[in-house]
Length: 142
Image (cartoon, rainbow, N blue to C red; front, side, top):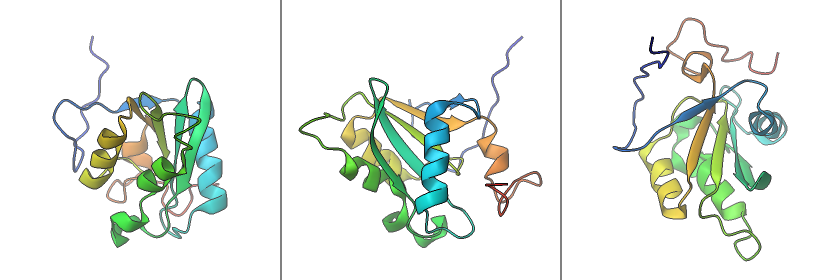
């Protein structure tokens, strides 16, 4: 029996894969706490952490609502947060908490940085999708 869910993302590049981790994954929890503390999104707070060899080497939260555009998305800020002299970013993983997909600009930034793995929290496509009736938008930190 195949337990793979088919998720209809608004955007996903060819040959790219999003993996899912449980709600108690340590890096998802770090991204959640970072979002709670630093996100400027009032409706959809979210954040990313970049991890290499088990250590967080970069992090950022959104600087506005998702719909306000790429200039507010945390992916490029987290990539810029990495000290490249101490931690080359190539081969790192990126964890996103608080959203359920990545726009083309974020994918482009991750590809250019040579991010290896991309992870979301299980059920993100439900919990953080404004169009899903079972979302937790507005109650993310309860």
